[in-house]
Amino acid sequence: MKNLPLLFFGIFFMLAFSWSGLILSSVIQFGDLKPIALNEGETPMPIARVGVAQQGKEIYINQGCLYCHSQQVRRKGFGADWERGWGDRQTVPRDYILQERVLLGTSRTGPDLMTIGQRQPSADWHHLHLYNPQITSPGSIMPPFRYLYKTQKIGDAPSPNALNIPDTFADEQPPEGYEIVPTERAEQLVEYLLSLKLDYELPESRFAQ
Image (cartoon, rainbow, N blue to C red; front, side, top):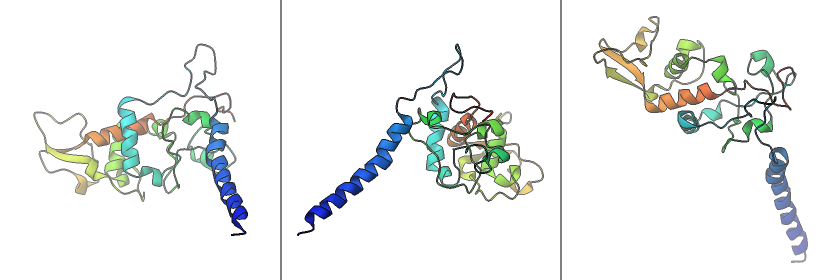
């Protein structure tokens, strides 16, 4: 056991290095960051996500969306985020300070979604995209999420939220007298996607940069 001190030192070094990398670096980055208003009288940003949109975040996580989509815009000139129209400025630590769980993502099999609520502001578009991505994005490799929708008999009048599937997708049309409507989970997920915006500036990240 003559190497016991060396073993102890090695374990201590590994733990200290991990703690510094995971905890200390996060504290240094986030520190005392708070929402901030760019100009006097403006609403401090960012603001917390609440209500149905926050519930939709749990659906986003449960459905595994974060495994194919990131939520971080890189600065101009670093990657092609700017050219792809994924954001008008880079994301910075302050953008995430009010999120209990930050969904940066693990890969970019699909496009970054940090600003999808700005790029696609229509709830109808998102529902059609989730039901069958080929309707809105021909050639997409994203799987359909049809199980988030249900087919039901039309009552006295069609439901206001029934999907309006184009005639060119005849195989997706419901039977005569029926309609396809979002489940509560689909409504929550779409509300969350619509809330993903980066339409404000911060002192450390401006649109012009």
